[in-house]
Amino acid sequence: MDIFRLIRTGEGERVEFKESLSDVKGIMETICAFLNSRGGYIIVGVDDSGHVKGIDIGRGTIPRLVGMIRDAIEPQVIPQIEVTEIHGRKIIVIKVDKGIDKPYLYKGIAFKRVGASNQRISREELERIILEKYKPRLSAEDNPVDATLSDISESIINRFVHVAENTRHVRLTYSSKEDFLRRMRLIRDSTLTLASILLFSENPQPYVPYAVVKCGRFKDPLYPVLEREITGNLFDQVELTLSFIRENISYRSYINENGVRVEKYEIPLGAIREAIVNAVVHRDYSIPSPIYVKIFDDRIEVINPGKLPDPLTPEDLKREHQSILRNPKIGNVMFLYGYIEKWGTGTNKMIKLCIEEGLREPDFIEQGNFFKVILYRKELSEIHGKIMELLKSRRMTSSEVAKHLGVSERTARKYLKELFDRKLVRRVRIGKSIYYFT
Image (cartoon, rainbow, N blue to C red):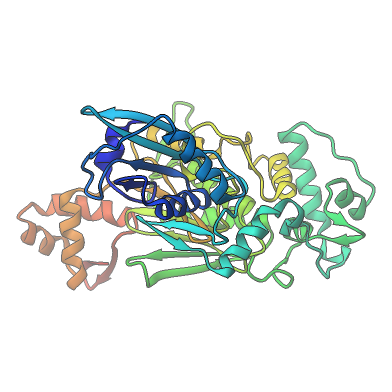
């Protein structure tokens, strides 16, 4: 813990300043909010502006504070409390970890942290937190569906078994479709489960219409210039979504030392695939919302319903972490199929692949009840940016672009081709001239 950095950063989602211990209500509400959110630090002896005032600490100060916290918060917690000195002035640092037994209450009220303030948790959100707490018993993948064995595809099962035997070297024997599903734990009380339909039906959407991927290419956040809805089973969704992205980002091809033609995409396909697989495997299928894939000029966003399972945080995904499966049966099938190489390594692989290509490290973000992965494209040069601005207003030829920029037409054509390859500009031939536009 770098106390100087925390104070310099100022109050925010994970830091709260208190000038003294007299604001008991504010301290307890903040502890409650941190427990129900992502954890944080309460620094006592620092005013709202970040000036260190210091406080008087007697022999019984810390024991009394521990007792107040223990008695005030339900369920009971005992946070880490440390006394330190800055410029000869004593301060108290209360470290609150993200709670693992949510919801936490102070005087019967649950609080959450929003920016630098504490807010009451609504009844609807409180119900969601309680449902999330008992998710192992209520996993949506185990929900029964009104389907029959005729909805299960023998050919998909055969393909899966063939791939699993070659990828994982496991021999899967079964006597019938029903026997196969039972062995994979995809039948519950003689009824097909949601997971069985999502994985092994040609068309699961009649039973779960929101289990689709909505893909789009955007010039601004609101209006896509291209849209596609990906349906089918989860294997189809992974491959077709990957195909959509490949069609809408740039690549270069070359012949390697073995004489084989290789296509190298601007964002490593391995990182993109990991993001898609994670969204399909880890999404919350109890939330009636699709997965969204949005391609912007500078990034790709993959957004799935469902926050990270407790106690995982977005920061955990950037280091070695335990794999916590929301949908273990779907996860097991995807592992056997080879989509998951090793539990708990997918996000680390994304980071490694992007950094190796000189790209910005991916971001992992929780927004409301959704989880977002952002994969960044290569940054545009200043000249690229100027051309994009020019083409927003009207179509232009390469010679017109060259004249506006004060460069040769050959240079203008080079930059225009790079933008065209990245699907950032389009072109049309009118007569003998080629016009570029966004």
